[in-house]
Amino acid sequence: MDEDIETQLIFDDEHDHYQLVDVGWRGDFDRVYSVIMHIDIQNNKIWIQRNMTESRIAHELVERGIPKTDIVLGFQSPFKRPFTEFAVA
Image 1: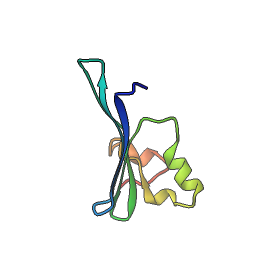
Image 2: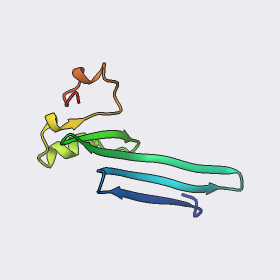
Image 3: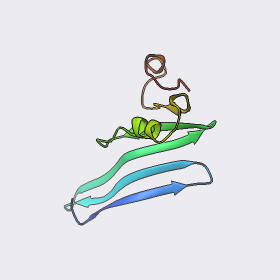
């Protein structure tokens, strides 16, 4: 990773938004702003909005005792969610 790129952990506990973001510059002209992971809590469910890591966050949450019915794969279209093993919304 370039030293001019910072990985930031962003917590908004008041609104239940959580992100892992890369911010900075690669060289003189290449701006880096990349959301690596974004998780929200909405209506008492964990919404995985984005996961660009190799971790299977939803499965890790299940292993830690969170029911699949409380996890929404927000990155999946509403049409596809009923075909997953997780909550629809």
